[in-house]
Length: 542
Image (cartoon, rainbow, N blue to C red):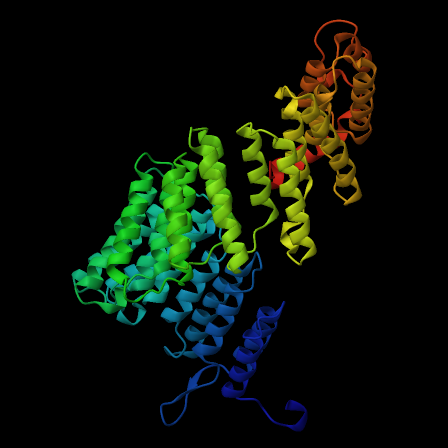
């Protein structure tokens, strides 16, 4: 414009600044600020003959401050603060209060510090908020913090609580109680709304502090009471119930599951007519309760929720069946095997009805359950389950493809068949083990330390009079384990239990004393140690 002899005015600058700032691209905040600083020089604020303020506007500053708040730059908070200072300096230079920072300016500055998601930055945001609140309470009514200003700080503490920062949820609730008090006293125009209560409640649902689930439930109860008293805006969402339920399950408190059941009952009493059985959040509540009872070793209670989900037509997944079967397996009760079969048949019925696509994990868990129960013919039965998985995979269920965990479960069923008195059964189990060890590698799965340990244990299936065959099998299995780098203490344990002392001492080059993993060649255990580090860093399935 200047090339054509035209001088941009404040409105023109404001439009360009807003367009740049709201682009939310890398560097957009800096580009917007550059234009803003040019605007301050070329179009400082002034009042025209009609008393209208012209030139660079407060909105132009605010949109830049907001851009820095959302920029993710480490120096974003400082940049935002510098613009507040520039605004105050520009206002003083104008000779009148034409461009004073307003509540939106300070709200954006508070947000800039809150967005750091670190304790120091969030504390700074609360400090700025408190100074703003004090100015308002001291008489500067135009600086009254609005609900967005309050919520920004509470939300920041909520995010800190999710990062397991102790004390964050408590600070969020203290802000809520202060807002309640100020509103009751008539000193602020804003009452806490649904979002404020929900933000603080959620901070407690993820907090590691003692009593956190109860604090979350207390806030949920407050919302329910306000809703029942006629404030429809306070109606809690089903998701809020689910978050509190989830907090109780994760707490491991003695009365946690009683709390869970009470919350589900209350939800259904309050909103029975408004939530259909296909509501995902309701399904998640039942699923969480199922998991909680399973975790506490109460499979019968867990199955009650599974049965209810099936009968009500709720959304099911393999997790539901897997956890109940796993709970029955760990319970090791007289009824465990019968109930395990019952749950497995329920799952198969759902699969055949098209309401469920079971995954590999639940079938693998079922194989482990058969082995734990020492069912007769466990190896061929495990093979039948594996065969069904392969058939379903070929039919299009890609999530059911057998993994190393599945093959290991089958190998374990074979190894545990050594307790069978029937030599033919042992012979069949050995054949199944060898076949599946080969299939594992042919299907692109890498054997691990569990695989090799089970293979060594399968040597017990070889008749006692065939010592040479047994020794040869142990040697070859252990050699493959060494070559793969998966030797660990469990492999050594099974080796020394299954092989003769003469053989294992020769294999380990250990003429005397007890064998120690640390004394073995490093290359024998490299792969296991690498995988162990990965599992510790990222979590791993067992």
